[in-house]
Image 1 (spheres, rainbow, N blue to C red):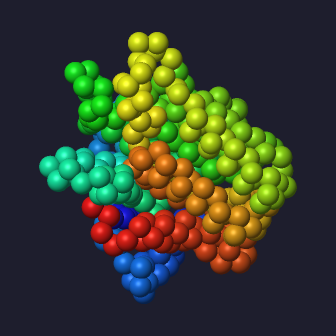
Image 2: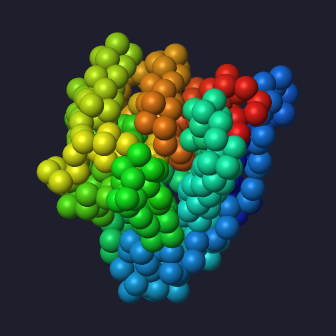
Length: 364
């Protein structure tokens, strides 16, 4: 199953000459829908309009005063300038949809995972257990990783991934199974954010600083910071101009290192109990394509083939981790020719569909 949420129904009239490519979202969504509808590789796919995030959901992550000031149009000119957008009611709805879409995608994916696990416990089918976690969702927007607790920057007002992670932790709290260490624990113990935008996921790094329930991993360009550098749980910087070989070798190495790291320092959690614990119960993938060699704001030189290989490294990692996955769009800034960036964005979602299809039409 692959569920898509989309936010492009909320259109925003941008000022003439504004550098943010707002119309890319609808173009990418249409390309993905057309490809999937024409594809012979059919798994269950749903396209749903993103709900608007609620005040309660956003306040799991952001300052209530900041949320209220943004929603009511009380931001200062300096604050709006730092974000990069003028304030309009159109943009408020678009922002709430961008956040709500990732929240909905995450909840849909984990609820489907629970349903499958419950079904498998009744059926006691080992073959089906192998695919229970392959219930992914994707938001054809989002990835707004430069939003902080009480301010935004870099075209980001609220962090959709951070809000979604906190909602998951509240809605599906971890419940240990102490009686039998081989029995599956319920709920979410730890979340991983994989951020592969060309810019550091600085907002998420700050929002989850010191929070061992959410691990942040960012691979980005060393010379492309536009504000203060933050500290993710794992930051990997690549030099400007890096090409496919350097990028893919580095990413593969660190994904393996993450996979091998126990993450649990509690000496009491040993033996069978640790053996049967997942390292991560849920994964977010911020799939920015501004690493593309033709991106206007990126400073890496990754080809379309390299981006496709990057996506597959993440998909394989999530599969090995046996964790549900949510994919968000992230950055991508076309030059005069929009085709390379639109193709790269659409490719993330199309390749996720192809990946799940490779496991067969019945994943449950």
